[in-house]
Length: 319
Image (cartoon, rainbow, N blue to C red; front, side, top):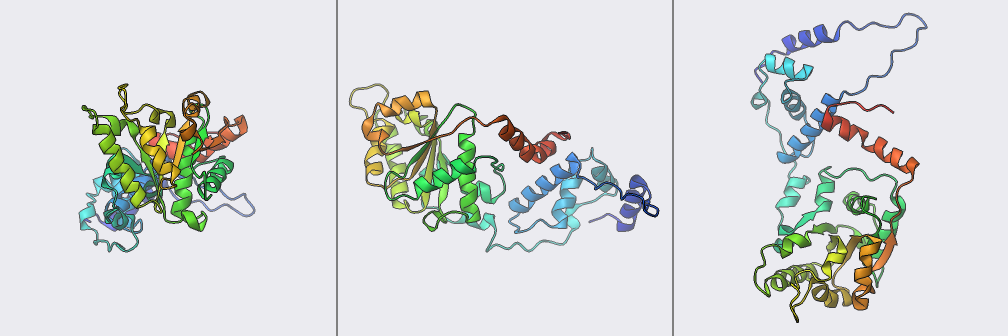
């Protein structure tokens, strides 16, 4: 890599100082904790490994991530020693088991992929924050999705209570294989309905685009769960206010009635009233109320996410 290992070891020893063994019955030194810079480097190393198609995080990824932050002590030492990742032995990616190989497979849903995000794939890559304190709501969502009928849950709660996080938790469980057999291997795709509407200047453009997406979903109905945030926007979306023009709700209803779509929605209680006005649409969904976290739950959520925020902001949060 261009760096002398002995020189690196000497500089590390000089910066860390001599190790003092506790005399006799003295209490052992406190356990060392990772600094925010190291946490950031480990996350960056993870991303480098994934981007390179590796099925593991190797020394080359960790060293490259450390060297990429010259403001840290490790980065300063590595850059002073002229460390170069290009000099390291090339890795042998496990293409059969890496997410990179999974992403290269054709999904059969190009239009859905264009206007959606595959949350299950993001969960496999470790790019979804852990979901804390929402096990009950996730279990309810899994239960509804596993039903034979009325198997489209809609998460109802105030803005900011964590409805989207519950869906990400569902995606993580599917990625981990921690779901009933009927849901194993499914992709949870978050559909951006606003993006579907955008750029449709002429009457019929939106209907054609959404019908294409619905056809793709129907063809792969046993492989997909579609998440629509702000579910109430399907009522009137794309209609343009013109008489006789279809909106998203009317396009989705026939496929929902036949059980060809599996949708998870999210909306507020007030906005859900708009869906309830359309009885044919409302009866396709099973409401799940999402309450605001208690103060104790909120503290646990913050503690669970502390490492990620420390790494991102390069700071340390105390209790």
